[in-house]
Image (cartoon, rainbow, N blue to C red; front, side, top):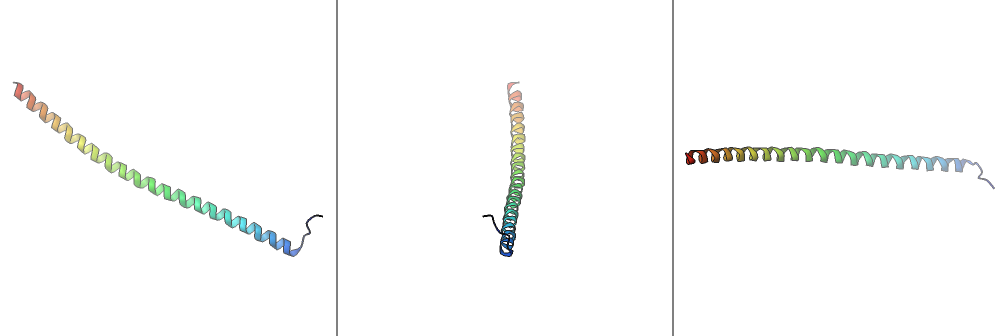
Length: 79
């Protein structure tokens, strides 16, 4: 025999559908929260990478200056 449409079954369906809807909303909110957290971490990591790159650039410039100084000393010593 099929399911009879009664008021309690109607209310039960509404409650079940509402629960499913709320569960979906919570899942989507968790996804948004996780994506936002990942984005913030990516931005912070990018800032760290930029600072590290700037430090490396400065060190490289200092090394170049030292090499040029040594080349100049070598040229003046060989004369």
